[in-house]
Amino acid sequence: MTFLDHLEELRWRIIYSLIGIVIGTILAWVFIDFFVEQILLLPAKAAGLKLQNLRPFGQLFLYFQVAIMIGLIFSFPNLVYQIWKFIAPALKQNEKKYIKWIVLFTTFCFLSGIVFAYFVMLPFTLQFAAQFGSQTIENNFAIDEYLSIILSIMLGAGLVFELPMLSFFLSTIGILTPKLMRKYRRHSIVVILVFAAFLTPGTDPVSQIMLAVPLLILYEISIFVSKIFQKKSA
Image (cartoon, rainbow, N blue to C red; front, side, top):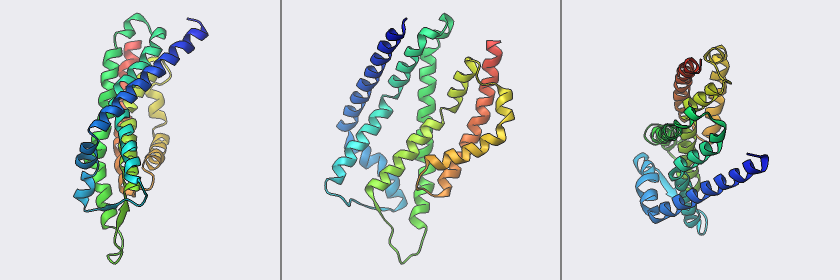
């Protein structure tokens, strides 16, 4: 393929990815009341938070935002598939057969991060936010700020749970080695703590630590994954 052919292929992969996001967003909009009431607002109810809308048509824009975010989650397998199909021409024939399993494992890691954030991180974070401070000050939370925290934590956790998959990819092409990861383990701990703070903006230190701990575990898993596939490559 020429350079222009690669650009044409990239264009179509982007178009297919956007079509998947649009379809996912439409499906999310059909069931938007269920996603908002029974899923996204449930942690607030469990923590006893009082939510309020402070802008005209604020709830309408929030529903659109939620639909797009859920559409991204729905279309994530298609997005990963399109990325790997674009990379496929550079892979050997025996490597191409793993694309299906790579898409499944990548999706599993992403959804595992979202589930971890929803059932582990968010309850502690919201409970801390609801109970912290003076009793004479009533904690009422703006709905847009609440959903921003919810979605950022869930999507951030989903992305960082892709660390083993990233390790697999970089080890396969020879950029990453277990020796290199062990050598810079201490540096990685500092980077992980900073990364966890960046992915949980405006939240308490509890959620940052709770995201950093699985990240450290995932880093050790990534060393193991890199070791396995380096042996196979050899």
